[in-house]
Image (cartoon, rainbow, N blue to C red):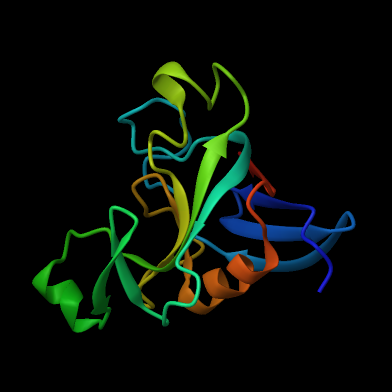
Length: 162
């Protein structure tokens, strides 16, 4: 597999696309913020602009591993848990933690993507993909985020576009 050059996320299409040697390699459906785009702290919006993958979390953990605060809880997600905690924003399988690269837009002060804890992460299979619905993060199917995780390195650029 060639190294991933960059990742592009289209908010309009609700799609994440991987580029290798400036060619599209694969695309996945995603779910971004139900509040739309935005860079402000506390907005629960998906931040736009150029980012990088600052940390990869979850290497070698099983499918549906549950994370809280970027730490493994030791639990494996089952759909029945949604009924017990219907408003929980489930973070599963893998985490790609994003850091903004544009000072004053998505980096620093009141707009810092990393300080806002914006991730690309796995979600329950019952999540509706292709439609905004998250609290700011980019949600993916678990098998898709595992595949993406293996394709990217820390430092890979992620462009989030309207």
